[in-house]
Length: 406
View 1 (cartoon, rainbow, N blue to C red):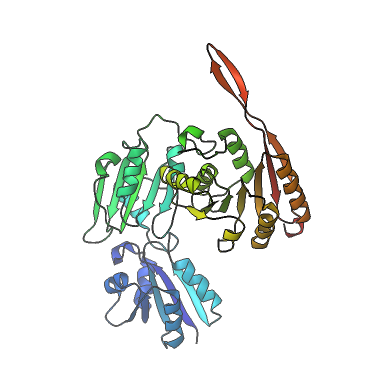
View 2 (view 1 turned 135 degrees about the horizontal axis):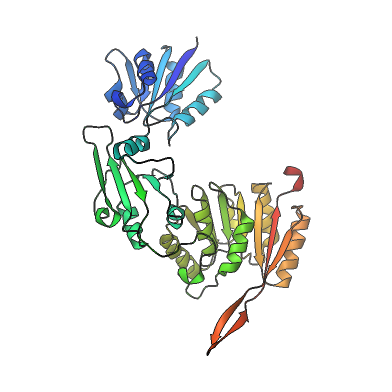
């Protein structure tokens, strides 16, 4: 017996916000599984209903039920921050006699954009629902963005004001599609005191500052510094160009110092995760402050020393090593074990560390390292003259995991 399972995007949770195909599939179902908010509003009186949203609950239900037509309800659109793909993947891996289809729905973003006569195709999209994402990059480029709320938007609106974007246009939709639907419009500075419902969505058009924000090579003066060494902006720009951080990468910053590289990685990997590893107490407090300043929700601070504290961290895609405390071979060895294709960038200033690093890379069979020396001089004003003053040269080493695994 083949069980026909249809995963249905229910739009805003009412029949009016569902597609015709979704309504037809829902009415044909003998058994409906989904969160109570949806099943209570949409299930028919003759259909068996099981409240739930956990994958294991669905799989257990399917094993015991005799019904052949099952509807699995998800809110919004099946492809927009939805559990639909998780359900589909687990059902495919269950190796049971299931026929699985997905019916798309109307996303909350599409609905809000239509209600406010705004486009959303040119917007970056962030979510605060159980995720940690960094929207600072959208501010750097004056890019329209949408955000799904976790516990409302008071904090985000205040952050916009703190960065000089209090004049941004903001649309907020609460309880969309329900009898309690509320859509408000205003400037960020006017709305930042308003409490918003956890089930809400915000669309922002950044406006209001003449300050140039940078996501790459941010000036040292922008960071909270203390007396902890910081990677100079010019060196950081080269380092970031070598790291090639992707949108969803997992990145380690080993020996994070003030967290300047961590911050830039957090901005580059807006939908990924960054782990700042540092053992100095003063430096850790600075990383906390810089994390807050640059909106780095996806920056995780890991107290301690590498390689010991790396064991329980997620597998890295990219790794920056700014300090190893004499444990470079052990760190590089562990990184290979975690990800044989890991991409590593290492900054060193001492010739002894350079030699140790190159030997370790060769012994561990990393690909042939690319080495650049970055020597920066900055103009210092002396009376009416400007004199160039040299900074310590830095060796930037780039290497990848073993050649045969790539």
